[in-house]
Length: 75
Image (cartoon, rainbow, N blue to C red; front, side, top):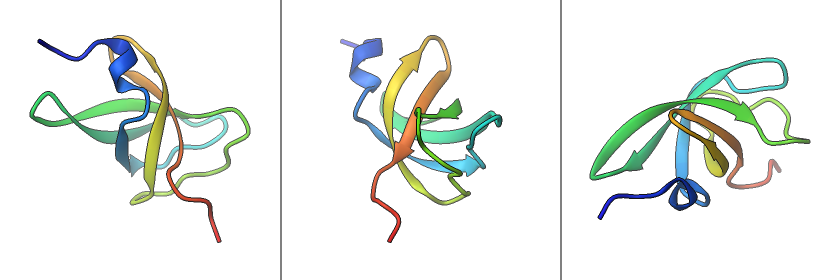
């Protein structure tokens, strides 16, 4: 049984192309037994997410777009 769109929400990934307001970035998410790239936008209120940042998927727009936020607050 494969993952559904709702299953993407809450998954973690890593930024591979800067994500930020007005930018379409890229994240790699481990899914379906491998790692896949998704186009990524920042979740509302989220700032710039630089390459290497660990993120959480908050919304998935099929087939390959996600909205993400930092998995850990900057500090």
